[in-house]
Length: 527
Image (cartoon, rainbow, N blue to C red; front, top):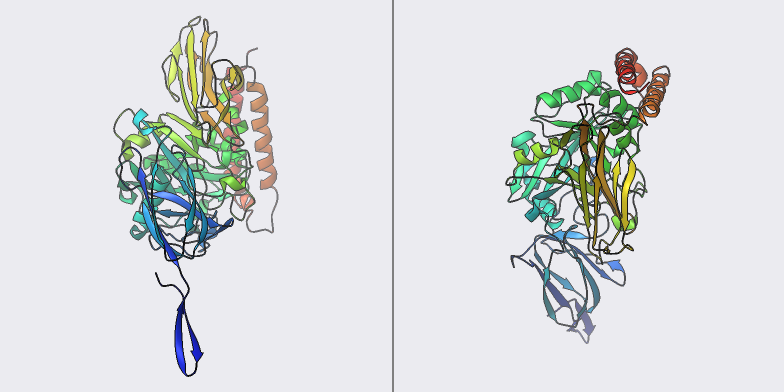
């Protein structure tokens, strides 16, 4: 193959000298179907990414604040291709990494391209687990990319390359404007290919005093510019439009715990984004989750990447988890064929677990996460949990069954019969005296973790709250409300802080929440 051409003048003639070049053709096939499969690729030489990319790249403009910060490369210098690509390359030694989400085994290869060589390689990617075959489908509920119908197919390649069944693309807002527009919501905004689905949602309202609201599954976006700090109005309308509501970022950043207290205690909130790399380099944060659960308020656990924010220009997240869709995801169990409606219903039912790698199965008397189990006093429970991982890619360390935030049982990879690939635990409670929320969580290598939505157990109809922590969490809830009231009394010159402007309406909502706290204190605290 002829590469770069040089012309040398000599005695009024030109001699043409060719510098040898080469090319690389890569095809990636699925180990089960044998068909070409979308994949995430990193191609480097001497530790540095190649400077040119193949024309087959699935390219979509993305960036912070809807700016075009990236196009064909991902933030970690990887790129997506539908299944194969061809690229001219100078002779040399290259490192190729092939990745396809959490369930496939990554591959690394060293490639040597010789002068004038057209190197062709075909690789087969295999799963270490197939969750779809078990009825569990993965989702990332927090992706920020503007979308018109023209971007659908490229974004579908992104989903398929991360083996992510559902990607929720969020229109984002603040007090002044919105970003990452979506061309439609509900069924009209869906784009599906087999068991892969793009759908639209919203992260709006977003304020530094109350946190970031989350919503998806509604037939339309909801925004009240003149009542921007009244999140409950948005949540109520999203519910009317068939949507689900929640708080992002574990309700820990942007004072989201205040908003979760204000709206969660008044039963406006369906879910909490429990796992994400935005708050710290430890993706699983549970304090606000256990707060609500111990007070007897069910919340579905979800997770999302917050692409392209987390790990990109914000010093959030470890380098190995640099911003990419699906690095934090949640799985939802469907007892029927995959569809948008079936998925949304299962999320609403709480049949979920969140993960940055490990897989969890969990049941209480055969009930799934999100289910409710009603017992008579003195009845027993059989609790089973299993964590699965890949010893080389997702090695497991610890599996725990927790109730009311306390560990009922724990196994580690060092225990007899346990391993880095599988941890299993069964607990028998012969007699249950009061209600419980019970969940499973596990930890793996470095920052890999997983957590289920609880199973909610009531005894003689008495709910699942934690009588030992109710007083502490109610007092903490009041502290959060006082924090908010202090904000309402402070006239900020910074235009980002506008809570004071909505003092009257927010004070009414604070009073309503205090009434709920008073009722809970009278009802739940044993005297």
